[in-house]
Amino acid sequence: MKEMLRTARLVAILFAVSALTAPSIATAASKRWGADYFPNIPLVTQDGKTVRFFDDLIKDKVVAINFIYTSCNDVCPGETARLRQVQKLIADRVGDDVFMYSISIDPETDTPAVLKDYSEKFGVGPGWLFLTGKAADITLLQRKLGLLIEDLEDPNDHNVSLIVGNDATGRWMKRSPYDDPQVLAGLLTDALHNWKVPRAGGTTYTEASLLDKFTRGEYLFRTRCNSCHSVGGGDGIGPDLAGVTQKRDPVWLSRWLQSPDEMLAEGDPIALELYAKYREVPMPNLSLNDLDVQGLVDYMHKESMRVDRTGTADQSGAKAPAHH
Image 1: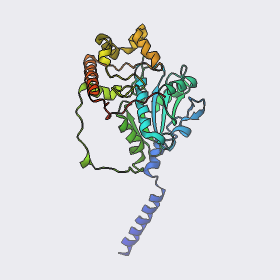
Image 2: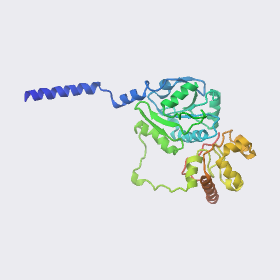
Image 3: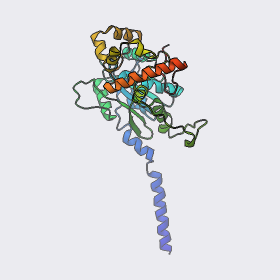
Image 4: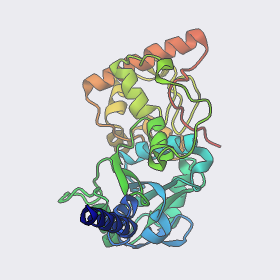
């Protein structure tokens, strides 16, 4: 019996010692995805300040990182506009306990001055850095973050490229920049902080309303268009689209929705006028098919009629920021 008790005490002592010396889950995660994994490359902000990727940008922080280039006429303008909505929802927490970074994959063109001009076009607020650096360093960083698409014919071609994470816990998630901005904001302010910041006036699931059933056109507008446009809510990054189906020729409008980059390249006068009027932010090519375009046209027409009838714009979706 005494021998059994001695053995039990010895096991207990060994367990206690191992518990004191074993790394915590967070520490283990940090070592796996921390300084030994992420390259501590130098980058330059839109204000000309040199920073280190790991030491200055992500160490012990909750971050959102995407890769863009300012001459992109495809997904980059839409990504930036959507993340601007996220920044507005998070408000003063950006630069405090949430940090946002957009890194150029065309550093030869995207100097700090070019990036600063680009950020100002979208009305970006404080705490969101636009960064450039050496091409090889940025490619390495994309690869480490799992956001590099290998063997592309065009080195400036890329797909959705957003990742959010918390270096302290080692938790990282790839997301689409076209996610609902409230979902992205919730990830950055709640989930990645392990819900440490309490919400005032919370409700239970029993008080939740039923989800709306969207038409194809409304779904596309909410996920692709309302980061830059509203219907009856006033101009944002792009023009208010109330009445656009009556204002524009149907053939022109359909092609503009499907191939705006081609129309700009061809020098279409209306396309050039819009480009000049709205701070030279190009309408992105959203890779819409014929059914998508028809759905959007139908939605904009019906929503314009509803706004005209009621005098109120739809407030359920996130609205684009107004120019100042």
